[in-house]
Image (cartoon, rainbow, N blue to C red; front, side, top):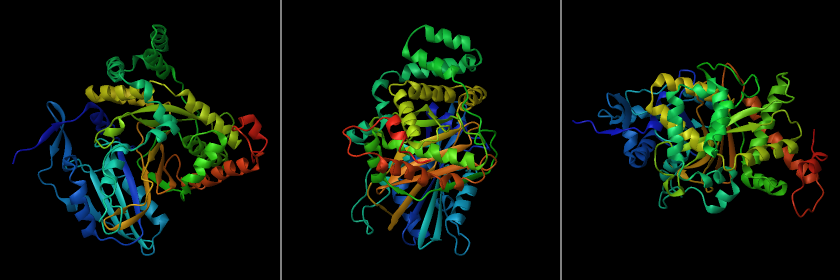
Length: 485
């Protein structure tokens, strides 16, 4: 039987080659159901709806011509969809331990790089753990794949959402990250060329700041952004930053109503992202204080993915996103002042070329020698402590394999020596917050998670204590006097 082959894109190759024992490039998700599902029903659903995407029968293979997708001639669904049991009476702690173990285990490169693990007995229902290598697709595309596998009712008589646009124009206006896309049309080729130049020079700009300054002086917004990346200093040294090991830990928080987040954002003149990221920054600060670390003036930098697909192409597999460096002001104690600092940092990224430059560098990484990819990846990753991503999920409850999905969570991989990933997803009117950390650097991520809701509540209380009504949201200095300690 002949082997069906298809060349891999250079960006997908870059993600494939980023795998390290200490940081596997595997996206992990967990679905929690309100009732028990069987392995037979699960396999049937995956066979009909997941495998209709031919890519998931393929595996990446290196050949003389480069990397290619090869159809697995010995494909066995049972190898990829397995049943795993929790200890009797197992709950959140046991499920978190299982997910933590699985995210540290590499996938078998002799077969397609994905697996489903069904936990048939979890609470009163079941749980499903999905692992898929990043080289297949990014989070935006995978959410569309997941939606295409769901139903709108338990009987499956009304199909769930099909792959297609994931955001409306009103959502794009509300989300500052979506506004980054407007000025980027037509510069992807330029960014890819710039990335290739950086790769050929082996990161020369990063080693010689004077050349980066000279590049910026030549004029041009794209050159200036490249110089900014080259001259970027490392963020603050905290216990979250260091050389990661193999073992990881995951944790998740109880969901909070999306309507509450939107209400606080509207009252304070900030976006949903501003509110959530500020609460995350507060939770990280509280954890460091609990650990006895100094936090005054501390700034943690996060790599934030930005979708670069047109809305009508969000369902396509592969990776099509850039990255921006976002400063999180951990050193600010006042919750409102911290919120407005996050908003200011987000505003400063509007119109930035960072996303397309990052995508261009990834494309160049995949096309060039792996040794230079490793060098450039290390240089880029050393300036950040975490990867933070926010994926919009469906706003109505959906059904999968005949059971209602109660909760939907996921964790993103970290590149280079980055040891922490923060994931936010909205589902059925709730916001779900997940955290993955390196066990060597942060062995107890649940203590970070525990502070997320209290930090959000501080913003709620501060807003309620402020003088009402107001015609326009007050400035930070006007709100600080009402902030709680």
